[in-house]
Image (cartoon, rainbow, N blue to C red):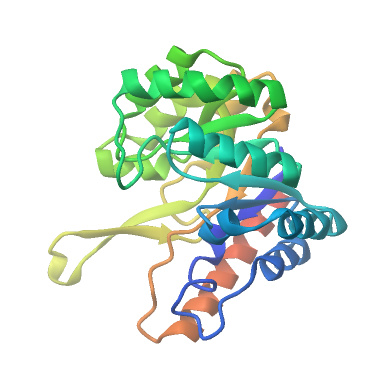
Length: 269
């Protein structure tokens, strides 16, 4: 498995809260400097407005840095997925992550299967894999029903077990159920902490290895279920809450978490 970093690991540093948001080339260079092998451009809206020359520049920058690129978006409407397939071709990307729902479209399993059957054959022709992420808006059972309903070697699951906790699904159960279909893994740790006065809990991210994610068990389960597991990339993400001290403190902690996560993964090789 190769190890990489997502735009989500730079969430605050390229947000509108940053005095000067990080650019995509800066994120690529930082990933390479940290030892990452892959960079996933995930839910990064500006990429959709890039013309062919700008996409070529991103591809060339990644190539020069020795990085493999992946893409991430949301939704299963064929037109949108084919737009991302076109970008994938221009960026030499072979993995596109998506999610079933968007802000204005929440297909049931039958509709999702029908829509994906329009787009996935084009992904097959281009040798690009589409991965649907586990998350709280869609049950793991329904997500797997869609993947099995389409029945393509080029459609699988992006495993992120922390997302499904908000649906009261146990991370270990999500890992076990999805392992045979996993094509990409998002690595972020998570924990519950008591609120002041012990009135409820906050569910948020934490440094890798300090929370509830059983990373070793997750990787072992996927490796046992997937004969091609060596080709599945692990991508660092975070759920880092905004810090009361402001942007500088938040950005500094985000950088520390990213370094810690990629170093932990590299040590586990």
